[in-house]
Image (tube, rainbow, N blue to C red; front, top):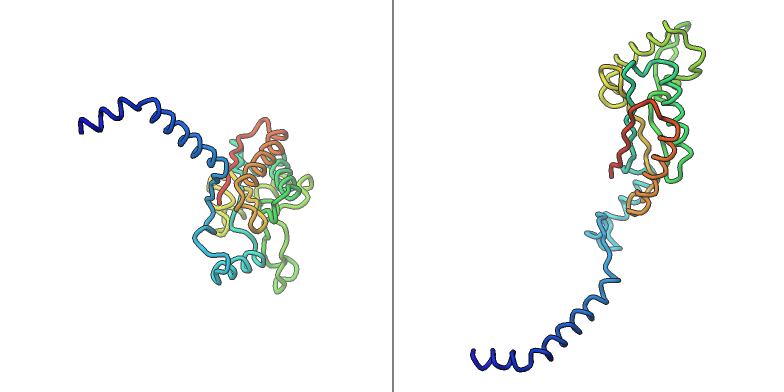
Length: 205
């Protein structure tokens, strides 16, 4: 042991230079280091499961979404709030990487025709906002809060918060850069138009 220690002390500068060179050599390879957080790293390129899942996504869409939580303390069933919700919905439709948008205004409301009860009507839940009277808006709120399929999903039980959900195109969420670009684009579009409302934007992959 003493001989080893003496050798280290004797050739300490040579050892230090060798360690430095080895460190620099290893560090140079870090430029090729990449982070891959996708589930695809666990499957081979020829994986049957992966191919079937990709085919499924290409047909039925993506499970990666961006959600916008919109809140109005006076309730979302006012013309001002509904115009804002509709505006966000339209902006998301125009955003790159977004394949589909689900919101309170374009929710597909299925109901019986008042004049012809045997006929089923499917329409956007909110259409011509300016045409609604206060009584009709109140009626819309009562209908929405009675729809189990959207309560606590698109609309909160107190009628003050709603969710606008943008579903991304297939494989868009696999690239972290796309997620950041999309989030920044949505933030810019949303907050340029919302200065008096509380809004939360979240990516879910």
